[in-house]
Length: 329
Image (spheres, rainbow, N blue to C red):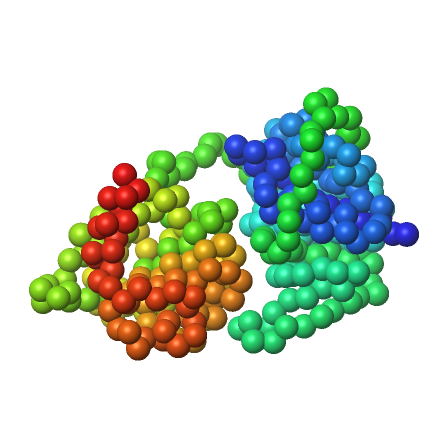
C-alpha cells in the first residue's frame, strides 16, 4: 500500500485553510497510508488541527512563512522524500500551484492540475472550456495532483493541542527577502473564494437607465454596499471588464481577475446571483459548479430565463439592490 502525502501550508487567520482540509478528507478516502506535510513559520497549531489524520511531518521556520517559489519548492521536495510518497495531493492554492510542477520535475514524477474529483485512484477534470470531462490514471510515481477547492467535504477533527510532529530539514535556497505585507483595507477585497455567495455584475450596470442617464457612481455604491453587507465575492462578465478597452467608463474596482465565464474563472460558491447579465452560454459555462443560480434582469426572455437560472427576478437591478442593501442594514 503506497504512501499518500498531503501538502498543506499555514494561512493567516487559520492553521489550515478549508481547501486544504478538503484535500485531506479526499486523501483519507483513497485507502493508503496518509502522511501530512506542513509548511510554515510555526506548524504547531496546524499540526493540532489535523492530528489523528495521519503521520505528521513539518518544515518550519521564518524562511518558510512567506510564499516564495524557492523556499516552497525546497520544503515540498524535502517532505516528499521524507514521506517516501507515491501520491502527493495538495490544494490548488496560488502557493502550491506555483511550485509543485517544478517539484514534480525534480522528483522525476508527473503532475496533474485542476483536479475536480478523485475516486479509487482515478481523477476527473475538465477540458475544452469545461465541455469534456475526462477520467485519468497514471502509473508513474510520484504522482502530484493539485485539487480544486469545493470538490468535497472538509476534514473535521476534534483537535489535539501539543500534537507531536516530525521536523524535516529543507534548505531555504532563496536570495529574496520578505520586507512586509501590504494588504487592502477591510471591505476592499472583492475576490473571496471562501464566500458562500458569488455576486456577478454585468454590463447593464454601465448602460443608460430608464431615466436615460448613466449612473456609474450609484452603481458602484450599490454593488460595494451589497458586497460589504453580505460578504459575497464579486464576479464580472467579460463584456464588462472589456469595456475599458473600448473607451467606455467602467466600475473602478473591477478587473480581469473578477471575470467569470468561458475565458474567466470557474467559481465554486454554493449560490450565485447575476445582475444585468445576459446569461448566455459563454458566461454561464463558468457557473457549472454553482448549485443555486439566480439572476436579476429586466428582460423576461434573457438567457437566464431559458433554463440557465433556478430563479429569475424580472426587475430593475438598481431597485433590487437598493432594497437588498436596506435589508442588509
